[in-house]
Image (cartoon, rainbow, N blue to C red; front, side):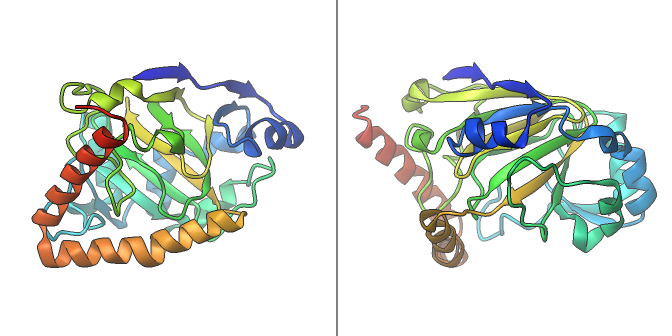
Length: 285
């Protein structure tokens, strides 16, 4: 793969962000955006406010058979989970912890960055991961522009534009690529199109904000225990809104239905379909 370091900008203005990144749909790593409030966002602060909650946990493993992608592998006391992450490597992570539903008090320690995004304020969400956690390559089903703000530790993020979907072996009726792909150690013999993939690489630390444009793929590796907050800005164009509606109200329903009646057979079929389709489109093999 061909990876370019994502552009890094410090203390950007609203007009500059809109002109150089939002309108052109170009990713950028923003420093100095969160101001003084980011100092409050720590593991200890989360434990103090929500440490007694029971939270669902996910792992690096892909779901199999008829099991839903959104079904957790286990649950744990939030405070115990944070302690577990800090003791040593684990791949357990928290997916889409909606702040307004589970810990609205956190919003008292937060201000929406004024950079020109029209935030969907119903769904600021947190994501947690241990030092062995990975989030497989995907794009978000509702096609938002994302502002991804990181706290505690460090993480590596790979970003790929929507034009890279074919070379990434996008799985039909899904928002991810073929399950056998490991972007840390690509198997170019089985997935030769990956050699053609072009993307960006970002390394995030506490307080950094990564702008991920709509439809952009992201692959995330937690290098240390940490957590991030994603702020979503829903599609503004008619094309984006239609795409969101198709994904949420048609594609996802078809996929869930087929998975329910065929289980692993449907998953395996889609992965083989992705392999054949990409190689055919790109004239490989």
